[in-house]
Image (cartoon, rainbow, N blue to C red; front, side, top):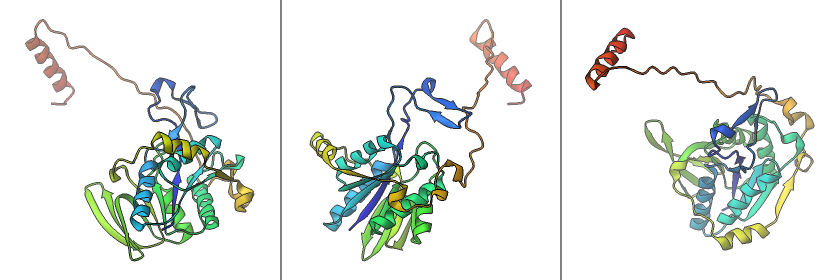
Length: 267
């Protein structure tokens, strides 16, 4: 069973708020000094799903694809250390500042060049923008089914059965392969690479493909050719007022608080 897993590198979600900054003029997040980006938190679940399906099938190849700067190799290496077989980095100056539509198009062209696999897996969303639309876009461009927010997947007889996470419960759906599936964190804890696996992954070659390698039209990439316009990017300003309720005793403070709440028509 051949599987493609798409992974992404994102700013560390644990970055302290004091070190989070935005360049409002350039409409971009300023990388925090001394804090390296990390693998998108949802992507190891997608890799784990691929590994379980390959193990259940008894054969197959898992190819990991990441679109980003050279540092995105680390996201690929993490998946290789978990047990994936091959890695491809999509990196080109014209890939910077692109939108979700362009990302989906580049990934779809890459998957066509690799060869349409039995299954394409992704994390449910990228933790930086949290939109979750790229899996749907890739599926549409490849003209194959897409199932999102999976907590369990099973493959049998050319079909895939997926248990999906809903706002108020779960649902089970079935579709044919090939397909795109986005995997949620409810899938379960992914395996943690051991030191030996990390060392072996470090020696594996990661191919680098640019827009020429993919035969992309220059007019389809680049931030100037975005279909989704980013109007503004800023850190919201939060204002708050604090009033200390006075009183000589707890009872008096409670009465004064109740009066304030009544005046504000909150009780």
